[in-house]
Image (cartoon, rainbow, N blue to C red; front, side, top):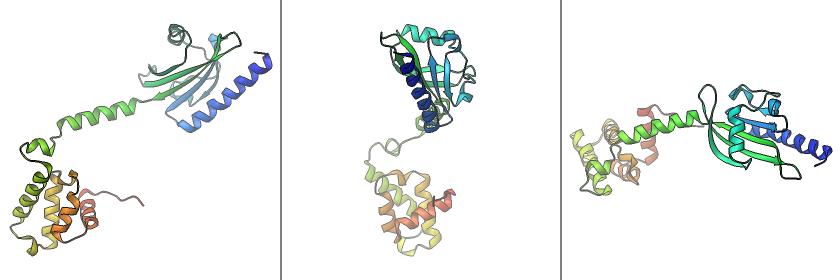
Length: 215
């Protein structure tokens, strides 16, 4: 690779570094290394606040070991960490000269710490949730829904043709609290029983839950 080709390649990768940084956002750092000068290898960087590095910084010992242990082969979806303990999902693509020697590396480091915390929270929430089917193991889903509706009606002390608006809201609230609306086609069945549209049920649920409907 001639000096002119070398410059053209790294100029292109520097522009790509900037563009990828803008595309992927603040939680993703993009770094371009010139491996021929490891003590000041960073020649372009986007979103440097993630690791606190800057142009002119070098590859740390961990980075050198990582690259060498993989024989400078392209790597995808490996885990690294910042000095503050943030978990990063990383990938590295190497630039080679005409002899096949790695002379540069374009690295992408995405902070997934928040996603991992969210996953843990979801795992815990789902683990403690009791599925409706498990609560009534001897019945199928349709039977479960029918029984829940019967229980909801009984709780009002009236028959459906005597329901006031407050009774309908009470039935919807009863069913929502027990997860009935997670069952397929439950909304249509309840709407038919109450003589209202399913959109009315959505409105009642939004009022009870305090949900906002996006414009």
